[in-house]
Length: 364
Image (tube, rainbow, N blue to C red; front, side):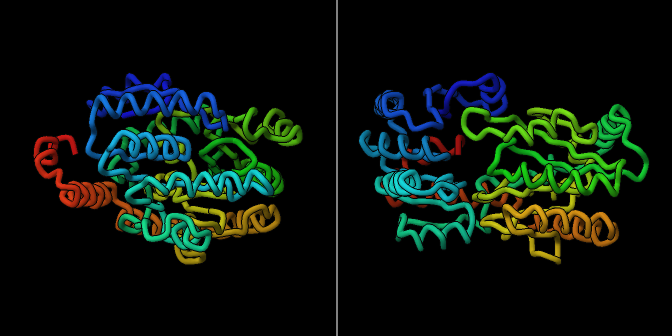
């Protein structure tokens, strides 16, 4: 495993029983630092001589694919989970779109994590002839056994509600993700403020951190978070299951996604999903069948959908049960892993690396 360093690395190594190597990737455009990372990756790959390099995230993809190519790695795979440049304009949009093309050039295969995203990339003439969606989408699927409500999780959820003095009959609305503009935080705060006027016992729980350097919230939004007693910011939480078990609806008004994991996790836990009508989200939810979709960047539409859900609990529950069934049927993690393993095997056979495959089979 290769990524930038962080406090969770030791726990990750123990969990996965796999060595982790640190490379100082940054999310910003930083030519000098990126060159340092590229050189370090080339050295790592030449030493380890891997048969497959599989990258995720834009920066790891760009540097990882070219380092693998320059190091002679036979199989170079990249998963596209999101497209940050979709929300940019002008020169920056052109630059980031070019970087996406640059990433695809040395790759053996590009895996968009949704069907809609693949069609969009084709329209942009990116990675033509190299793309394939695994299964029905998603980067890693969902462990529905883990993301389910058992007795312990239910007890923890009740403890949270008791500690927060949640009244009987009150609903908890939840958001999980970065607290930034392009996740629709502004629209969600404004919409919930109006919902709260009609249902004063309801609460909005936010799980995630702000990114003031990359995508800061406005002063108005910071004031709402600071002063509202009905909105609780929990910060990053390692285990989100008790919070989801306590909540009724996931509100996810993001501007852009690849194929988001949070709705899969929330839906598997029994939350109704209220998502933006954007790539990825609109492949998970069929509007009016197993959840609700609203246009992004539209506070009025979001508020209207929240009010409709709040006024019709039976339909909300029906949507929640329907999406839970779909997620556990279509996006099971074990199924996706089998598909990915099959991909690895096919690539190794194609490149004449079958002996390497047999040697390393237990690690795949």
